[in-house]
Image (cartoon, rainbow, N blue to C red):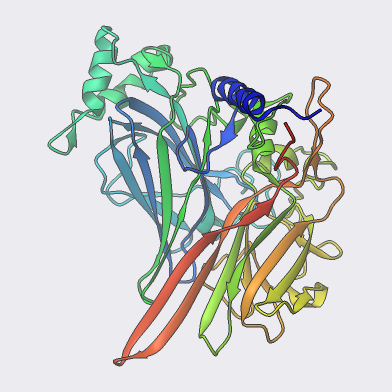
Amino acid sequence: MKKSLPKAIALAASLGAAASAHAVNHNPEGLGQVLLYPVYTTEAGNFSTIHVTNTTAEYKAVKVRFLEGMNSQEVLDFNLYLSPFDVWTGVVTQTTDGAKLTTQDTSCTVGAIPADGVSFSTVLFDGRTGVTADSVKTADRTRVGHIEVIEMGIIDRASDNANVIAARNAILHTNGVPGGCGVLSSAWNSTGFWRNNAALGMLPPTGGLYGSVTLVNVDAGSEIAADAVALDNWSGIQQHANPGDEAPSLNAGDPVAYFKNGTTSNFNTGIDAVSAVLMKTNLVNDYAVGAGLNAQTDFVVTFPTKRAYVNTGTTTANAPFTAPWDPATSTACEAIGISYWDREEQTAIIDENQFSPRPPVPGLALCHETNILGVGDSNLLGGQHVRATLAINSFQTGWMQVAFTNAGNILTPIGGDTTVINGLPAIGFSAINIQNGDVGGLLSNYSASYLHKAVTSRDYQEL
C-alpha cells in the first residue's frame, strides 16, 4: 500500500534520526568520523600529500594508519591530536628501498615523526613475526597503498582533571604552535596517565573530519587530487588506544548500517556494517587515452575492508569476499568483468588476452586491496605490485565499467532481515592526464580525478 507523501517523509526522517545516532553511514558530503583514502603512491615519479582537517571546536584524538596495497598490512600508524579547527598534513615519498612519511606540520603526533621522516615497515609480511612470509616481502611493496583515519574520540572540554587540562593545553595551538607535544608522549609512557587509563577525559567521537590526498609528479608537472571517503556515525563510544596499537580497527564500530534509501540493517560485526555501506555491484567512470590527446587514464579500485575477510589463515574467505589471501602468490583474487564504450555508443569488452599480467585464476580478477588499472599505455600512478594493464581497441575517449561478477559477493544482515546486499565494498577514482606540448613551447598538463560512479543493491525503496 502506498503511503502519503507526508507520512513517507516522516518515516524517512525517523529512520534518519535513528541512523544518525546508532548506524554507520557513508556521507557523500565528505565529513565524518572515519576517512578512507583510496590510494597513496610514490611510484611513477609521484609523491603523495595527505590532509586531515578538523572542522569542529573539539580537541580530537585520531588514529592515522597507512596500509600497503597488496594485503592492507599496516606499515605505519600513530595517534594524531588535533586542536579545534586544526589541519594536519604529511608527505609520503620514495626511499632507496621503500617509502617513508615526513611532515613539517606542528600538530601533535604520538609516536613523534622525526624531521627526516619515518620509514614504512615490512614486519607484518616479511616473516619476522613468525607468520609465514609473503612471496612479495620487500620494502618496495610499501610504496603504494591506502590510508584510514579513525576518530577515537574527543577530549572533554569541561573536565577539570589536571592531566586532561594538561593534554588540552598541549594540543591547543598558540601563534601556530601547540602547547607541548611532549605532554602527550609522556601520557603514553609506562607510567603515563593515558597508558594507565586511555579513557581518561575522553568522550565519544563527533565527526566533522574531512581529508584528501594529492598525487604530485614534479617532473611531469602534474597534480591529481582525490577526496577521502567519509563514514559518519561509525561509533557511539570513545575508543582511545595506544599509539602503534592495531586498535581501533574499522571492526570496532557499531554493527548497524544506514543506507541512502532510508533503511538500516544489523550485522554481527562492525566491519560488516562498514562494508555494507560501501557495497557496489559495479563501478563506472570516464577514460581518455591515445596519442591523439597524449592522454593517460588509471583506474584506482580499493577494497578498504578486504583484509578482515581474506586473512583467515584457511582455504576459505568470509563473505562478501570469496578467495583467501595466499602468501605463496601474494594474492586474493575476485572475479570481475570489464566493458567499455566510446562516446558514440560503440562498445567492447576486455578479455583475458587484454589483461596483463594475467591473474593466477581463470578470467579477469582484482587480486589486491588497492588495485590500479592502467588503460592502454597509461602509467600515471605506478603500482608495481598491484597494477594491471588493459589493452583496449582504437577508442580514445568514453566510459568503462568494472563489474563484480562472482555470485558469492554478497553480505547478509542478521535479525530476520532478508535483504541480501550484493557486490564488494569498493572505493576509488579515475585519474586522467591530458598533455599539450605546444603552448608557447611549454609543456602543459591537464590532470583531474573523478570518483567512481556505482550501482548498489540498496539504492531505493518504495515508502
